[in-house]
Amino acid sequence: MTAIAMLSVAPVIEESMAGEVAKAVAALDEFDVSYETNPMGTVIEADDAETLFAAAAAAHEAVDGDRVSTVLKIDDKRTSESSAADKVTAVEDHLGREAKRER
Image (cartoon, rainbow, N blue to C red; front, side, top):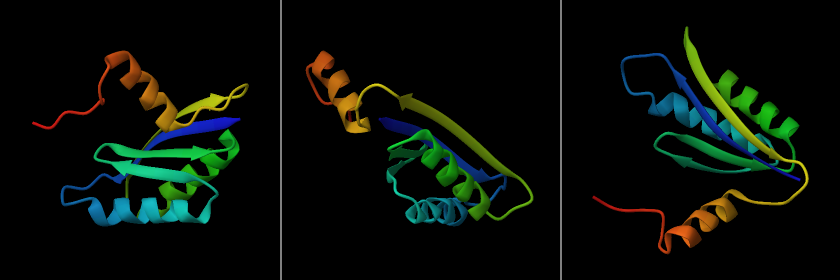
């Protein structure tokens, strides 16, 4: 089994959120997950959805503020193994190139 998630956790504030987002990302280190942060969120991989839910809850709780916004999207592959990198590679195979472009 493989479970992949896109997680976005941020305080609802006007100033920079980077410090609080860093706390959310650091909270993931307490779990048996791999992750990669990008400008829009963090992709997390685990063996099961339960681990993703627990990691996401910890990331949410790590952020200080009167109001915290969290978005979690999970792809729970219950009958096959496929990593986030595998999913990107499949798209790139169809494109015939890397799925990235610099401006």
